[in-house]
Length: 392
Image 1: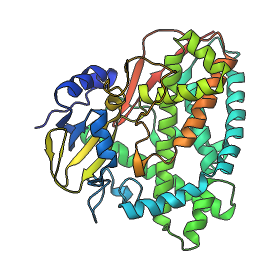
Image 2: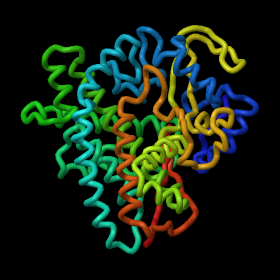
Image 3: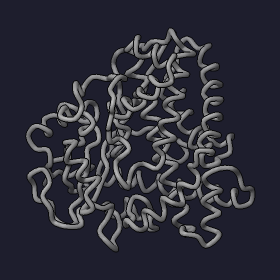
């Protein structure tokens, strides 16, 4: 039996374990999440190879993604997560129709209005939780704007689809949890697609429906699967980035003042937040040929998991890597991946983080954390703050 690194203790503080792996076994075979045998890659240089070398793909030609059923049986249509290079380019081209500069500019104005309204309500509170009362509604508000989710449905929808933040899970329990989440997401999106066909809007869902209904380069099943990836991944990425970034900035008086006053400082704070606490722990690829990686022989069909939290703290790439530094420039972190599979929603996440950080510290200048301790929640490849209580 291979060792399992992703234990409850690891999720509380993964960095000592990851630092040791970078020093001694930067490409090591593990059993991940209790059911996936994979190579875990922990050095930045090797991660760039995995993301950029065509011998690593999302799946073997003609086969499905790296996770066995039932975890991904809901993903039977081709998705960005299991597509061949040709299918990936096709799907990404359709999805990008909803991420035009004009569309992002319109979203930015609506996000700023939403954040300002939320902060005005929180300003009258003596104490509140940043995670559940700010980062969570902002994150789903943004993805709701993009997808055209009716405003009255947004507050309870994350819990309805994904359930309450979970305790640590692995193995069959994690498989069942993920399958249930995907089934609920698909059911909701089927209703949303039907609504948008009847009442089109200025949103990503409507734009992609047009491509599918016109016999374009995306099928109805692929449409639903693509929207599901945007719904879940977009929400989780933004929630964790905003919450953990505020958690770091709140303890740095000079940095938070600069973020409040200077849009450029806010922009670089977002990059550092993504690097310092990568919203997703890892990203997977499959070797489509035998090759050497980090001194190990990787065979065709082997799953390779890039530890994003590790490669973004690699001291060979980032000076003083365990320090949160908004002046880190350039900041070539891999939180959004690299190459052809660079995260499609990265521009939206960056926009959201910039608005959230700057507005939070500008409108709540005296805010401080109730405690220096941080509690983390985990769910498979996700790690984020469970709570961040602040006071004025």
